[in-house]
Image (cartoon, rainbow, N blue to C red; front, side):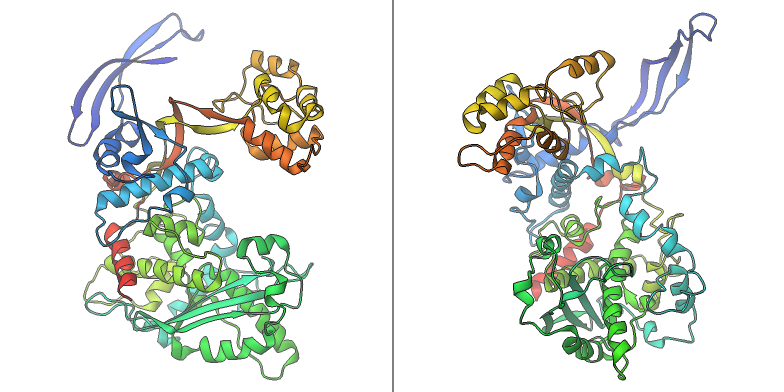
Length: 578
């Protein structure tokens, strides 16, 4: 069946949409008695409104190297046409943080576009977890929409402060307004300024096992914290303590946070740190506890408390999940479709258009958490229904747990997220004109011949000859599956020559099958890397279909989920005032 255009009527140039388009449908399907043709009214709205964003935003930002016009190459008549992907990536964009003292909305959204290009280019999440194969974003389904957090826990877990992490239990506690009176304090004053008292903390650990008792539980190796008084960070309260876990720190964990056994060998053990931190720092006098992805950090802290209580008469009270503000959850409720990854550093890029310095250092993560917290609280305060009634900590916690708070004008969908935004409008496929776009790995006969002096004839022969497993992930260079004829052709080809691999790990897996060896003064791994770099396949001056975050603020009314520019700017200017 084909849908063929007859004519376009009533194109609205103001909002860049077709109100009516006439089509006729033809079919020569054998189930039809002959060829039929009939008119149909078909509403059509091109993704990203064609080149509207490009013309009205991208090309209006000059003087930058890795965003705006700086990302675009000119064609033969001097017009910007291709996005140069040799300049796309966070490692480049991070060199051009937004200047919040002069930033206008167009600068903000153009930065978001450059970050969206980097995210789509560098992360498989955008390509794999989009609205065509998922109802909701991946991170949200794990942390907000899973049965573990939505449903009440089993009887043996309910009311167990060490294990009960259910949103349902949290809401039960918070709805009892006769209890926990400290939660009824306002978050903002009558002028809309933060007036909250809080302790923001973060941990670095030996790993991620917080509850699987079949293997050793992981332990805290660093605690970072800072206090907020009347809405302002008190710098002199900064807390940054390394802890000796009395166990080996796995290399995989050290590679994330940069803390090795030698760094903590002379640090105090948890028993020396725990009681003063819990009693003197995380106390009611200093305010509500705040932690990004609090279920992890509170679980780690409670594990340490439980171990302490098992051999000490001086018991410490575990921290309750319903009494912790978690910006990780808040930002997902408010902006579920800003960024494919909800990792703190990745969210920070979208909201504040800059790098979060020293990410995965506990104290640096704390300071990043403060800014996401402030954004979330300002956003909720802005969306109060009754401006005469202040937003309270209890209101924030109820919203965080998926409860529709009467004084917050944010309807929640079935997942408990902002119902005014949607996945389909927020992440879209767009036809993009690109140059230097790396889309996979392929070795031609010429490539292998050029590699000879660097890798040796024996390794070159291994690439040419049949390699067990060499057909993994074979696709066309445009990423589409091979048709039957192409599949037979590839299967008849020898070794890795002219076989296309989308993923680097699959290409490297085949190199392992080929048994690539060291050559000259280069190790086996160095030889593999030389081959991999040579095999990089690029698309030059052509169009591709590209999944990315929609940066167009004109689509907000249709559900595009974007940060609030004014609130992001307010948070950043407050940071500059410190």
